[in-house]
Image (cartoon, rainbow, N blue to C red; front, side, top):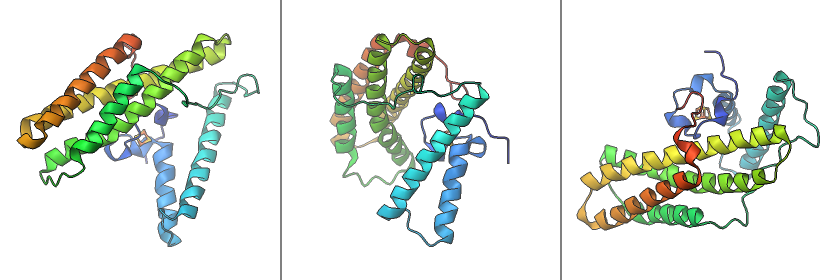
Amino acid sequence: MNELISSIYNYCDRWCERCSFTDRCMVFQKEVERNIKHILNDEDPNDPDVFINDVAESLTEALQMLSEEMNKEGIELTEDNTPAPMETKDISHPLIDLAEAFFNGVRNCFSASSEEDEDVQDQIQVLYWYAPQILVKIKMVLFEKEKLADQTDEFLLEIGEEQKNVNARIAYVGMDKSLTSLQSLYARTEDEIKDKLLTLLATIKKLQENFVGEFPEVLTYKRPYFD
Ligand code: SF4
């Protein structure tokens, strides 16, 4: 196995099936170990008890990894400098409205599709993956931006800025991929859903344009390994 790349999982879109770094990622390795354990113990990963246990385990692992990274950097976690967990509740913003419209549009457009063409299925999967992720990431970066406006601690400011830039870039790249998939679908699919595809195209274009207006750094920020 290749050497693991420290913290690579902080920069990705979590679509492990399509990731070329699976053999160098601690998160993927832990996931594989968990799946093997389920098979050996004859456990159903969808069983609520098993599922809850998996979530608890992966949260503990995430905290361990964070703590190890901070130790390597010589940073001690104290009550004052521990980054607060990301909260996104109670945020309203036109970008969220657009992202919700896009997410709902994707769900409604393809739910009854019995399309068998592999490439078309592939493009639909791209939309199913990114539409919810774009919505979540937009909520996260809006919340982060609001929080950073009042931040005076240099350390937390630096961490928060980086987190915001990574999440914003993931959302932006997801919009780009969605746009490409929609264009490909529009050229290939039946007339009956072309109107819906046009609406989705208009929505994602407007969303991306407005998103760049709010977060222009997404055009220049580069994530390690992925951009
Ligand atoms: S880096 Fe790749 S393998 Fe690791 S969590 Fe992200 S998508 Fe999955």
